[in-house]
Amino acid sequence: MRPPVPSLSLPCAAIAMCVLLSGSATARGEWVDMRTVDIFEIRSEFSLNDDVGQALLTEFQRLRDDVESTLGLEASNDLIEVNLFANRGSYQDFLSVRVPEGVSRVALFVKGTDRGRVYVYRHRGYETDVRHECTHAILHNALPYVPLWLDEGFAEYFEVPASERATGHSHLNSVRRAMYLRWNPSLTELESRSDLTEMSGSDYRDSWAWAHYLLHGPVESRQVLSNYLYDIRIGNPAGMLSERLAQNVPGVRSQLTLHFKNLK
Image (cartoon, rainbow, N blue to C red; front, side):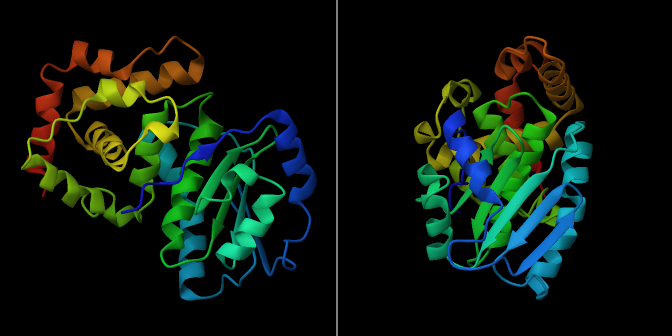
């Protein structure tokens, strides 16, 4: 599976330009379909009345609830603008004058000063990218910051439909193959990544694996995650999650492996 597309932080001047131009027509024409679903303002160059579009709109209705209830968070009601483009060319034309840093990506989340913005162009499976980027947006509505590896791990987790999150992600097969090669992912190494250019495909997979373990593993690990996110939310020094796990979950690395061995 393709590495997920990361969020992108822009300098204030670039954000101001993005805000100035965001309400205008697309580079190749007017928005064809505009909807508001929950906190998502959706603007699309193509109709969302087909089966894929309707299913995606239904998922918009529940995605924030899923993220909040799963992670024990409460996101703000700040609007999230979702821009859907008919093809890659239209997407690149639009971003070239608004977010030129993102032109080479297949999808994008930008955390602006006024609201989060998601940009995705239609391609096979584009709804996965929409869920991924909107998860970033929800997380950043709920928390003042999100560690890079955890931001990507959660976005990977929620990028598939709800029915597939526990056992249906393609990363699961990748993890199982890696286990035959003595897979031993280091959380401290993931925590050392400070830029998306430092993350490899296996880092994205391992971020998903740790997120999956923290959400579906033993209650002790889930409690450590809950406390960690709470401290981030209220502004307490959160430190490194790896250190908290080491203190509270003996043999956590072995528990991670055992978690996936026992997963049906």
